[in-house]
Amino acid sequence: MSRAETPVKKNRSHKSLKRIGKQSLALPAALKLFPFAQAHLGVLGALYGALRPLDGILHHRLGMEGTLRVDGQDLYGFWGDRVYRAIAKAEGPVVNLASMAYAKMVLPHMSGRDPIVTCRFLLQRPDCSTRVTVATVRAARGPMVRYIIKNRINMVEGLTGFDLEG
Image (cartoon, rainbow, N blue to C red; front, side):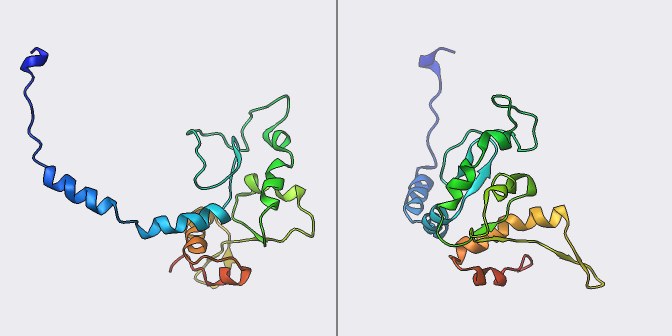
């Protein structure tokens, strides 16, 4: 079939496109949280170092525990104290939600004067004892960040209201 013979499809959804266009003009409530997140949230990455939520990155699967060497150094040696210096610029305490592998990018460079709060996510057993599980920690990080941003928490005392189960 030649280009001239290609059938033209009628756009039957023009009304729905107009409706979608009008809805997209309204700013969703979640977008109003971006300025707070951009100013207060730092994300650690093995390839990019310290990032902000709106920083552009390429998809990758590089982790801190990998075998990549840069100029003969592992990634901790490569980054040195650069990630710490980026985080140390923050006003107030740093809330550490990072895994141990990523926290090692920052913690060795901190002094006793640097305010830091490291969160431990505990699973309460039926016998009322508690323990840390990898699954609990992984499941809690995102909701904790969401809680901090949604409630615009900038004081350590505000963290105590977080409950993973709501």
